[in-house]
Length: 523
Image (cartoon, rainbow, N blue to C red; front, side, top):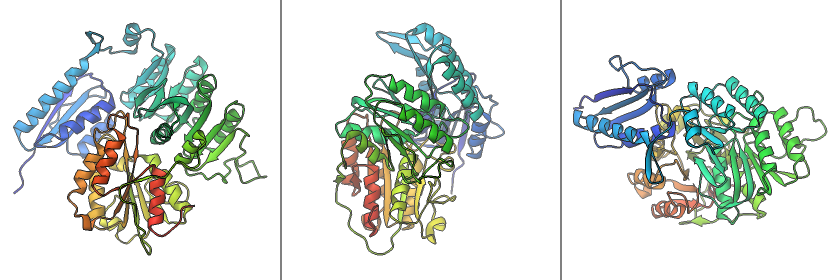
């Protein structure tokens, strides 16, 4: 007999809180004993719809507006739910103050108050609901601050307007939906603890920046700055406004001696504009347009060559690992394997990849398609087919494609934290693949750093523990991060290898190992 769940909802009126913190708090509440589901979200129409569809809001729930914080918890008993609500209050009340030296002071509630409290600041990080993000970012820009917009759900029209105004005022806008940056050695949002050094990175990809900066740091190099620009910056409507500004910033930074640009394939006209700017720089540059091979030309007006018109100081590569190698001057970075090496398989075997990092999923698609494998993905790059279903026995049972899934896409995260924050997002797909014997080779990524889950490898292994070793596919993983990260890369690798997972030194190496395992040779 099933029991009736208890649902309780509270609303904190006009209470803003960073969306990363809300996702982490939601995950913490959901993990408490007796709690079935929990969410802490701002009361925007989109979030209300998500919570309603998840059964966390109903007709009896209190009314809210876009500027209010909704706390909704469903559990097995009144005691469990009330305890969770009390813990939510504790978490939120702790946000009202901040420790400054030996003193505890109230947190500023506006951009103006924050500048008054810390007038030497020159950068603002905006993480409020999308409908408010543009106006808050504009306040920061007009007060002379460079601005990182972690928030998503900002319209492209607002993005263009913000970036045009910032350009006129000499400010840099990172984002919207900018998840990673390292400024003067300080990691922001999802970023890793890396060595300081001479390589500057400009990226429209958060996990792309994380993978490249970590590989450079692990192999003796260092990062001057890593500037995220938001996933839409190199599209035609936005025109690369932040990328061009970021390149100017790095060109005027005497610690930056070389530059890497990371993005999905840009709009043709934007690619030409960016390459022209790169060609005017005095430092060597590596461009990695994930999904665009070096022999593909984005310029429709160039009829003389199939290649990008690369300036003399620019090298184009196809993978994140190759971008790191180019910056390091090392070819190749050792493709180390931790744990038992992957055995060769015979015949046509199926690879399934379940990724928390969207750019890592894209890089794997590039490597598999280059090896002549037929690939499908819910976030396909050129050469891959589109896969629109969720991972189930029915969706993969009669499908001959190798399947690579970006678990950070909306269909997997609606109403839930991103899998880098809450690795349980991967659990249902992982168990479907394991129990349905849907893969001969299973590719996995583990992404470390600030903002990420405290022990993603430990969570992954706890899920694997329910599957007998003899029933598991060959599991190959990579760990993006460094020994200095809060989760510690070496400790995460050991957790995986102790559970029988083969861990490769990079995401590209993991993809290549999977290609070898099914009897092919990477290109």
